[in-house]
Length: 211
Length: 211
DNA sequence: CGCCAGGTTGATTTCGCTCAAGCAATGTGG
DNA sequence: CCACATTGCTTGAGCGAAATCAACCTGGCG
Image 1 (spheres, rainbow over the protein chains, first blue to last red):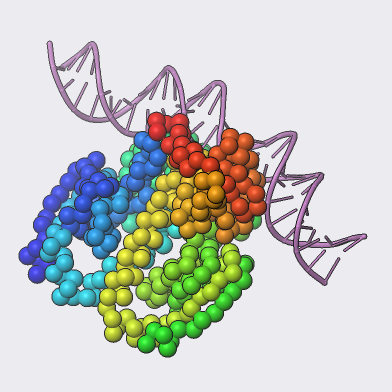
Image 2 (cartoon, rainbow over the protein chains, first blue to last red; image 1 turned 60 degrees about the vertical axis):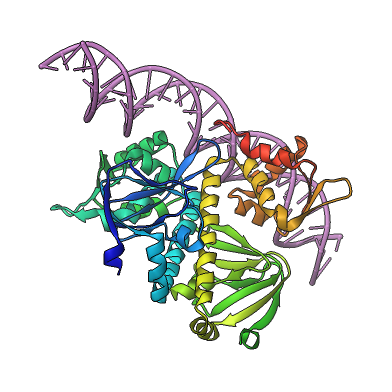
């Protein structure tokens, strides 16, 4: 049923899947690539509130609440997606209540991520937030090279990364320098080299109030 | 069924209902009073990430995901609650799938609130965040007095309020002074007087980048 | 009466933002 | 194929909002 209904589509970096406030036409599943979820702040501000990766589902929240999209989705890399229309999904849900439960679990973990985002944003300086995001992205986008270093291939532009950690691009740039100078992480373009994972952890734990 | 299973309980300000990391024994519904949800940051840090009010349900997220509580719940006022045990709730959910859907909607709106929190925290200064929280609390905790002023009775201590808007108590105190001096809002203890609602809106819209 | 927690005030510091310029990579038109 | 514009990123200087540190006030309570 799902196989018949789904619609494959691909999009390129920068492309916008849907915009905050749009009526929810359906949901998207990411086959490959990365999507940034943005939300408008006051005025012109527009902030990345989360990343979605291969295997994730987009827009189910708006679908479930029968509301417009609550944030905008923008591909940060080449993406392969599949789209399931609202009407089709409704049928699927009725036929299979377990899916609703799955959505509930997704929502729970999403909420969790956001709470964590709030708390890290409040309790850590930019530099430590940068270290933190590396730790978060480690499992998906880093692997050990020949010399045992951790080698990242970040699926993000500087601008998106900055917004994700809640900083200006300039501040991010300086934080990158700082981590580089202290030998914690070497950035070159979207590549990052970390020789000791513990250094990243120390960045986070070693902040003034206790540890 | 629910009526038989639920367990009434009351608690006083400062009392902790459950702690982050505790296994989820059941869920709580707030009959009256206010509960602050806290989450640990790095080190000693402990930040309020949301308020829950009369009518809200606590802990359903941990229940649904079958995980430990993801944040701590602390009463900020006298509270009347009712408690539904995990095992009982399971039965209720099986008998009544619509409840799961209700939970899903709750989770969706909770996520929404958190995204908003992130974005306001990033795009507004303390003073504007304070104005903003008043707007949010307006419907529940303010009413018009004889002279047409908006009169708040905040259900929060200064400390909790500060943490909620992501600021130190000292900074909150100064922001309160500032709003008072500019005639936007008069704070006296937990009472707040706002003569013109638009002034609060201006605090938020009137921030530098455009508006 | 002294103690203590919560709140306010003041002085100082600092982190990150703003503004502005420079630079490298990419793309476009002549 | 090269001058030029454009875009994304980095660097520097200066500023400002909020954190920190520390003292002090106030009200509640033993």
